[in-house]
Length: 105
Image (spheres, rainbow, N blue to C red):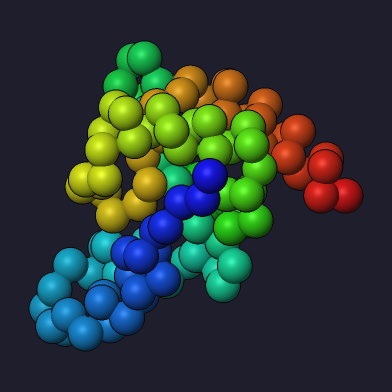
């Protein structure tokens, strides 16, 4: 099962085209995501939101795809923060990312 994220590829281009008086905070958030990475927001049970920048390659991992399925069920495809929002505790997400980093070497 694959996921298409058409908005991710063009996010920087869209912000560059916005007016100079536009949302500079949002532009700064996109600008600090290096090529090959993706910003995600983790929302735990307490509604605390934490931003993580992860490699795009994690999207292919079955354990991460499970989180994407949960995100789709809970939030649909409307992500008001501009990044992917994942329903997960911060501790669980950090654990998953640590395991995925170990797999990549």
